[in-house]
Image (cartoon, rainbow, N blue to C red):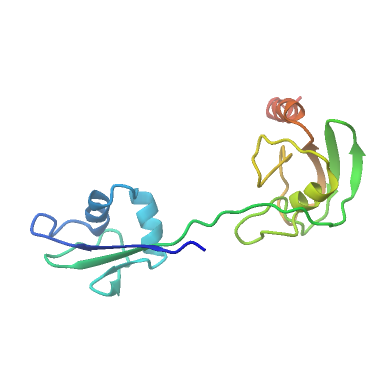
Length: 169
């Protein structure tokens, strides 16, 4: 289990009056200002025990700034025996009639019960171009959209299908 990373900074004379986001990113060069903005929006940054609400808040001499960086969530897709409506299949691709309400690939809020989980259970191999979270997925359909989805069984087919979709051929 990963733990949060915590940093405590204390402002000095040269940093007094600076915007909080600028001060923090100057002190912690591993943080980008856009990621820091996300941390501030999530309430992960405090000044003197109080949550900083805006990136533009200025710091004062002697302020104690606490930053809590949450652990990185890593996703993985696991095979699941879920029903699939297979319309066509050959050595290179599978065409699936995706049901409305089924999520195409795992994400933070939906780690299982997806089309990818079902495909991993059903297919011997899938394209690796889109990594372990989206194997074989050449395009996707939104959760609430039903329709045909083309899935590549190998990288050669994936590249060819992606090019055909991009060129609308």
